[in-house]
Amino acid sequence: MKKLLSLALVAMSIFVLSACGGGAKTPSEVAKAITEAMYNDGVKSTIKFYDMSEEEAKQMEQMAGLMDNKIKATVEEKKGFSGVTVSDEKIEGDKATVKATVKFGDGSEEVSEMNLVQKDGTWKVVKGNN
Image (cartoon, rainbow, N blue to C red; front, top):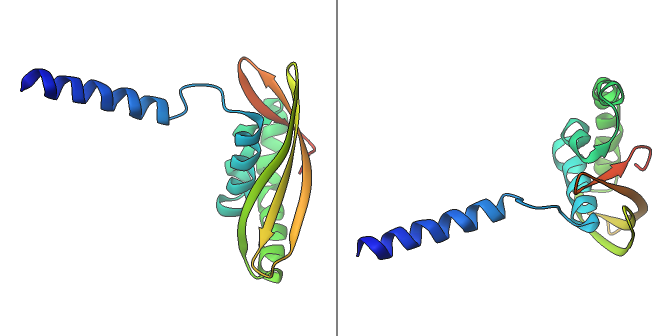
């Protein structure tokens, strides 16, 4: 019985660690995550997804309030944020592009193309995309 419990705990630990992002995400997963974070949690929550210097990150953090206000106004005008889908992932070496389609409560959509770069095994969005 103790062996079975030990095996179950080891299996559960492996599952939890792998679910926590124990590897590089795909460009599509990163594009979806950054878009959902921006609309649900605000611009500051997206900084970790960008390929930029510390100075650029500080500047973005300082401008986050203004950007959040613009996003909130758009979401209110379009009757809420309904989600995001990603498509057309193209990877060429350490660069990738992905189309992100943001869906709003009024049925409208906004499509944008994101450029990403892979650094140290992690995909990051190239600054200036959104």
